[in-house]
Image (cartoon, rainbow, N blue to C red):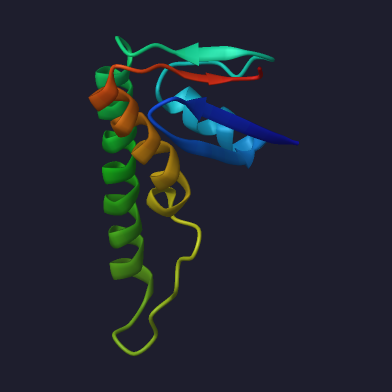
Length: 105
């Protein structure tokens, strides 16, 4: 199932339900049938998502160092930063415009 996030500050962001649930959990929200991230909640939510992305990058770099030799680099195509970037961009744009983000309408 797809979830569509909407804001007057940016184009819609569409993602799979599992990813939406995971990202919302990182920022302290639950995925309900309908929901909102108010403009007042955005600074904290952005900070939490940025911290999670940073933590993921640190863990990935550590794993890469421990398990891969110089000539055997592993490609990671499913990093949190790549999956979260459109949503993070939307949150930043909404923060700058004092707009809310909604889903389920």
